[in-house]
Length: 423
Image (cartoon, rainbow, N blue to C red; front, side, top):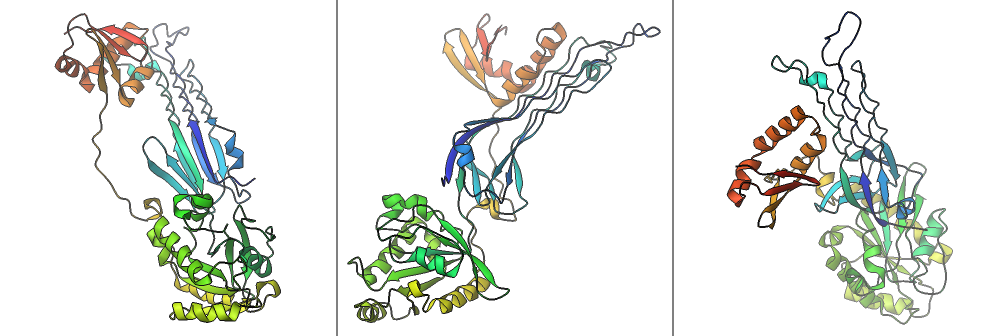
């Protein structure tokens, strides 16, 4: 089954907790803090796999989790590192962060891989917190939570050239005679429901990848006839082979067909019309083909039209030579900013937390920074609680609550932690 769009959730591993311990040996009764650090959590990594051609494996795997890091132990022993979870996807996969509406990566190279969710770092053992004023700290740091994201994966086939046109104009037949691909061919519309790829050998050393794309109809840019599903696979093609049924076997007008298909490309995404097209007049053996071709050339006098009978491979080779020539002259089309060499930076003000008023005397603090600080704080120890309180003050929580109207004795929540506000 060909699946080219899925939504999944990914959760990187949480870092291991640091340990609180002290060195106690025969001649070192007061040896000081000796707790080790926790190991880093595993990350979620997406990697190109040339053996895959669909996102089917991920359709029913809605949550992907990496393993957490091991806790630190005595004698400053470091906890084990969490194992990264590697997700293998087909070349041409686009990864989008749904919450932030940004494209994380566009996997278009054979060796490409990207970390989409970073594992949390391990918490520090208590020996890190030794100071001249506190030579024996009785607290350590918990592991940092791993990143969690909801992703949309979209597969856009990576082909040099693509076959476009109305259903049943002979696109699948064309692919089958110029390559070793075996698409389904039948005498009814929408025989091709999924894209097919084939390698076309033009000369001994010259070849290109050709995609047989499902047929388009009027209104495809609005999703009619599953138009959106089909059109997005055209985006990567550098050259388009536009096949027109010049025999008008289905009763349509070839002149109008050509106009409608190009209008759909323009409506879907303007840059599709920038791609060079090789126009193929197919089914020239049918009775009214020559008459229709004459009308077509009168309507579009500037177009070079290649006459073919694909069923018997007549006229096919000149088309392939022209496509190969155009591929040498046509650069890749940049689909999004992730494919550019330079980076575009945009200033976004970082807000460490937000304050939500629950009722007259209850407040809720939310935000990635403050929730991460809370998750890593050792609030069970007095020293750890004091350290966390200092962290809140540095983030400006005290001043923000006062400005929001908090009074002495009000309750303030961070996740499931409740504490009393004192001005």
